[in-house]
Image (cartoon, rainbow, N blue to C red; front, side, top):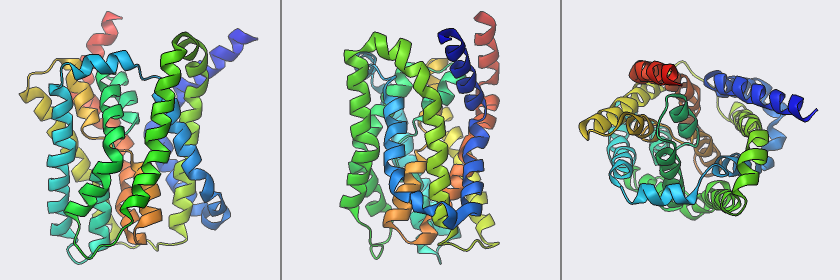
Length: 324
């Protein structure tokens, strides 16, 4: 019975991994369609997101984190790309195309202000990135997020945009920082049990919980925002900026002559953002239209992760698979 259960969980997790590029867009569409029928579930979003973060943090090892800190150039490359270059480019293009819609500009800025996505580790592992580097990038950026996110929004938005910086910090601590610390502590003190028994069983849950977060958040948007034809321009800019993020992070990693596995981790770490957390914050602390760029970001990010990964690292992936 135990062997059958482990086989089922392993196969389920593998199926969910393959479906990631389409799972979040599906949740978004269903949430918009169901709208008020499930919007009452909003209070559990923070709990669900904290559980997603906790499950991801269970795979983080403190010793690996220390080793990466001893060689900080890859980390610095990611942070320069994600917290200096990309916010600047996003601010420039958002103001160029949406100068008459400051709330939409704020939504784009929020895309660049939010911490690096836990899913960057998943995509990095698919293309044989350096796992310890990917996890360290996520961990450090997560710990800095309650301070960097409000600061980035404050620097790049107009002075007349009012938002609750302390509320954003509290939300990020509850959804990201505290679960990450708890997950790493559990990993540290019960490594064998976590890696062999707990993680294999809870990995599918993280994808299911993430799907529910997207579903419930989308239901909030459906009742608050009326979609317009003009939103297609937001979608187009979202695609362009995401591709730019991939190319910029990849270009910097090549310029610095990092190893191939480090290039993979830097490319995904420097590009992918925790957009589900961004959507939670957008709905709680910003005007309704600020959530629209985040919505399209969620839809395109996972799909482009698969497409860009194949284009940039497809040959490397094939090579590593042949060596297995």
